[in-house]
Length: 121
Image (cartoon, rainbow, N blue to C red; front, side):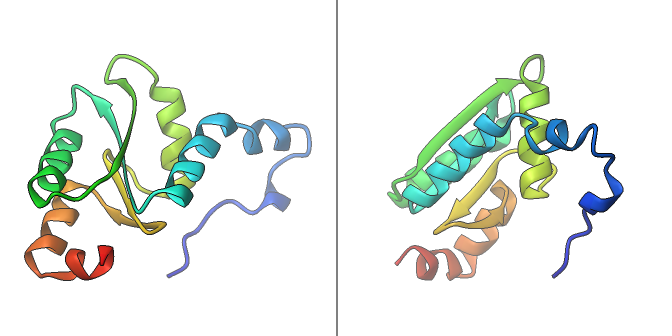
């Protein structure tokens, strides 16, 4: 899979630092958590799907780290940086052993077909 992103050569030098540094601290925080934990759920308040993902994981007895950033009314810019980094357009973003597996619906599919259990083993 190759995801299209704007090549640096097509970003004017005057704005490159702004592009590369856009909420870099938040992205680094998530990268650090993903590297240090087997399962990470990145979510936001007022959205029922991060809660659904956590309920699935709790039901399985799977330990996870949960990071929450704002809600529909706040912190949308930092969340945009996470979306740009991951290429995933919605929350939650669920990572297993450093790999983005998608959101709550994707997690449920992996649980249902047995792949999630193999991934976390």
